[in-house]
Amino acid sequence: MPASRRPTVSYKPKPGEIPTNPGVYRFRDKDGRVLYVGKAKSLRARLSNYFAPLHTLHERTRRMVTTAASVEWTVVASDVDSLQLEYMWIKEFDPPFNVRYRDDKSYPFMAITLGDEAPRVIVTRNRRIPGAKYFGPYPKVWAVHDTIDQMIKVFPIRTCSDSSYKKAMATGRPCFPGQIGRCGGPCSMKVTIEEHRAIVDDFVAFMAGGDQRFTRDLTRRMREASAAMDYEAAAVYRDRLQAIDAVLNKSALVLAADTDADLFGVAEDELAATVQHFVIRGGRVRGVRATTIEKEIDIAGADLVDQVIQRAYGDAPASDIPKQVLVPSLPDDAAELEQWLRDKRGKNVTIQVAQRGRKAELMKTAHLNAQQALMLHKTRRTSDYVARTQALTDLQEALDLAEAPLRIECFDVSHLGGTNVVASMVVFEDGLARKDQYRSFGVAETTDDTDSLYQVLRRRLAYLDRPEEDDVIPDAAADGSVVTTRKKPRFAYRPQLLVVDGGKPQVEAAARALRDAGHEEIALCGIAKRLEEVWMPGEEYPVILPRTSEALYLLQRLRDEAHRFAITHQRRRRRRDIQSVLAEVPGLGEARIRALLRHFGSVAALKGATTDEIAELPGVGPKLASAIHEHLASG
Image (tube, rainbow, N blue to C red):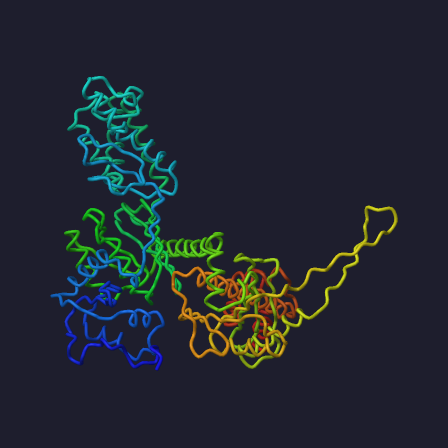
């Protein structure tokens, strides 16, 4: 019996051996290497899921379970303890089947070296300076320098190098940056070490979100100096206020001024996820951290948020943990996570879903950024020459092809409740999209998706057998009418590989189309979205590519691009169809049709609107509204 059809694995614990307590478990391979670490409120309930019949498990969970040779667990006193132990073990063992983080370490940070005798502010990408306090990351190096330039006008702290500082303190002569007004440390001979430390504390407090206090204080001092006719001092305070405004304008107020929160926007697919971490202090976004996660075992939604929170605060100092953590969905153990964060921070911490108002709008922004980052991650994987070459080689080996599939065509069928059926064909050559060769198809009559796919492939394959035609082109530059000819571009060249969006039924329908068209020499596969399985015609089981495989990323990109192109074509057709229907209403011109669709936002909303609601639109009276309503209701 194949391993995937066996009831379960040989190392399954006996009934009653697994305790019902909370705890942390580890799967190990035959060499003792830790493959996966997980936590559970009830070890028995969680582990029993792994020892279900193998053919019922998620493909990648099955691969982990069959790779392992043993499982062990540790009982803990509480769910909070299991959080801490899970984090420690993941960090210690780096298990290959847990999610992999690829932090964006390229962004620069502002750092204040609090461990020094006279702390200085620097721009750095090094996150391991002993005792340093970090702010950021910033999108560009110049953005950090610009912020520092403004900040030292208000809080003149040290900016010179350690060697300059030591030389100045030893000789009693100001450092060069101090001589030109660019350094405010003790080495400038203007302040003592204690006075400088107080200014550094104010610098850090301001950057951490205490801007209101400093603004009020400077405003008060400016007015007092002005009232005392000390206009020179008032001008200094005015310039400092302007510098504060310049810094704050680069960090717009997005939430209430007293809000200290971290907000996590997450975008994911079956293979990877991206996280946008917005650091909000004093109601302003003080930094954005980007993280890419590569999945090896199935994890999504709230479980992924759980892992993200643990990773974000596992080693964080208490000062970096905010009062609020805003997430797209609550993990099952949100209460335990809150207690864990409270214990680390020493103060109350809440984990909430951003559901309405400014927080919800900011979550949408973070989610949009995460989606763009995920698309960029996938695009870079498929556009890099080395990665593309590896992807095509891996595909050739995985699908047992005679040659690398330099031209791949992918097909997807889209419909709206069984109607308005359209299909798309996208083309990748040498691993890159050839958008000039994309095609879309309308399917007038069909029984289901497999029938639609069969029809579309037969229509496409028919072009392979057509002879090339000559295109007659008059040469306008010559005297008289000189006729030349050129070859008309083919509908498409012969592909080495056809990919369909779907599993076994779709692949079999596509194989039937190839067989009936007499083109069985073209390789075929399908990619099923839920489990990212690759199906081959005539095979009982799918091909499972590693989640980090370049080949799988290429297939996924093909499938997603075909789906996007099909949806775009369908929306365009639906918009054109509804405009055609509305154009039949007497007295309704193109401008009013556009205004109707723009006002209601969608065709469904317009069809569901009452006569009175339609009549509210400027330029549409009760009579015309009644005609529109009746026409749509009868359509």
